[in-house]
Image (tube, rainbow, N blue to C red; front, side, top):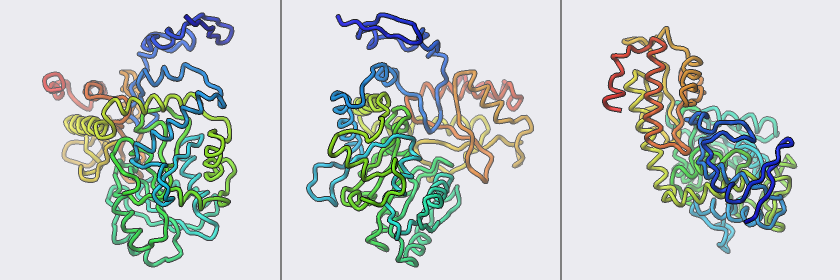
Length: 429
């Protein structure tokens, strides 16, 4: 039996490898003094509640140049390509895809693509119907990237004919960017349809897809969407932890980025080449987060793949809509526009009017629900007072039902509902 010492701030505890593998994560950890069971379930778009197995994977330390860690990096890259139903084994660069991992949040990697893919004489068309599309405008402005915004309402489907017209009127557009799951509202944009439209109008333009909150939670073949660059993050639907994000890029498009990057640390081509030649990150990698994602990918496969995970997410979301609706809340989006990752819930109103209930205060609701073990997310839609409820991560129907029951109790405490109005929670829920 191999034993080793785990020391933190002078505390030296002898542990076996078996101890690390089997230690009960629901118990108080004497090394960090956190009762794992007391932490709230995260009904957020990420970071997420992750499984105990993913948490445990981070108990092991790896050197950034350790052959074992480098093998894990390769497995993660291949696993992500598989989730996207593409491969790096094709000889044809137009059919082959590469997976490039990059330190930082998803926003960092979106900026890496904008910085690296759009040449200095290029132009980026940014399709916008939420805060994350507008964030790309900020990036392009700071980077000096020539761009044209094509903006729509945050709560309505993108007008495909308006997109067609905008692209047809400007032959200098070399790249088009669209957010797939716009978590401002929860709306799901039709990237495959938009990809085909781009090919019809501007066949040489390249398509950048921000699939931050959809990849791994919605089945997709990246090649079929027409995407040349697709960006997502470790701490979203794959159900890993924050620390890095990734680009799955068509190899022919990736090759064109050589020498284009405006930022050293976000140079997509140089990062890819470092993986190609050395199998390593250029700079210090988030080792624990990478190992956690390998475990998360294994769990995704064990769950039955993306199709089965999508079904779980949809069941969660259906219960969220049903539960909050029965509590008297309105939904911001109609079901036909609703994505599968997050739901925007309107503030409660006085019955028969649009006036927000006088007893309503989101901060009180948020804090009270947190004390009962559930964390929601503030609203981000500029034109509608609302909050957001995520349904991705290691969450199941029983968790959703418990959260709705807790929300009902909070509403009674806030004098928004009477106790006799929520008896259905016990009888039906």
